[in-house]
Amino acid sequence: MLTKRFLYIVFLTVLLLFSAVFLFKNIHFVKEKELLSVYFLDVGQGDAILIESPNGNQVLVDAGLDGKVVEEVGKKLSWFDKNIDAILMTHPDADHIGGFPAVLSSYSTDYLFESEKHEDTDIVFEIEKRSSQQNAKLINVKRGDKIFLDIDRDIYLDILFPDDDFVTNEKNETSIVAKLIYGKTSFLLTGDSPKNVEQYLISIFGNYLESDVLKVGHHGSNTSTSDLFLGFVKAKYGIISAGKNNSFGHPHQEVLDSLKKFNVEIFETKNLATIVARSNGREVWFEN
Figure 1 (tube, helix red, strand yellow):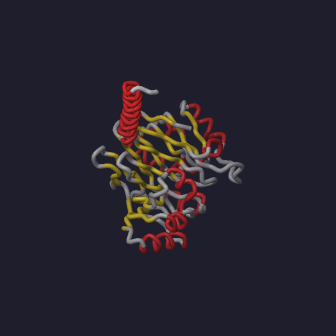
Figure 2 (cartoon, helix red, strand yellow; figure 1 turned 45 degrees about the horizontal axis):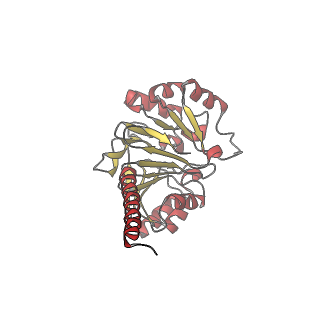
Figure 3 (cartoon, helix red, strand yellow; figure 1 turned 90 degrees about the vertical axis):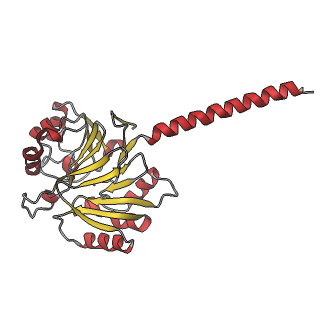
């Protein structure tokens, strides 16, 4: 027969173990709350980047070509979370915004950000209509604007482009370029910006372009990512969002060669699927 003393010892042991597990989970939770997460989503030949700040605020930058983005977003957000705080369209190419109608059928949003110089297309009209039906606020952004994700931790997207002084009618040249900043770490998101826009950014911002992570322009096309630009960005990591066996041959070999020449560690969605980056404000690391 078990003695009361033995039962008491067993009870105390279980209680201590439970307390230790609870304490560990709480410590882990507190640690996780300090992390900025940036998901470069696997949407095939296209761009889609989900950003989640430590306070839970989210921004979806582009959405790929079709509804595949909804599946990828669903893997990263809680099943109960049906709101993405803001969506941002870098420019109106279908492989960047074609998935937004599907996103807005599955999730609500509070803000829609788009380039001040965007071109009106049928897809753009559809996205604007659906977001308006959700009472989302439409905001056109340009150089000098900031989108704050977490005011307490000073996490924000600094909009570097488009610029009123840069005149163009070419879609890729209207791409929003934004620098995501958290503490001492940063991510440079370039849309499909070509080399002449990179040159313009260098003339305006110079060394401010320096970032830990570069979302390589135009899916690794040789129309973007000049050596001069890489020299100013000084990225440790380069993300290329492109589909397997895509008809454009992205990424182009000369871009890969340039990235290697500048000692940029390359991550490609076509090889790794969704790429997960974390930042604690002091350093960036990847969890693939």
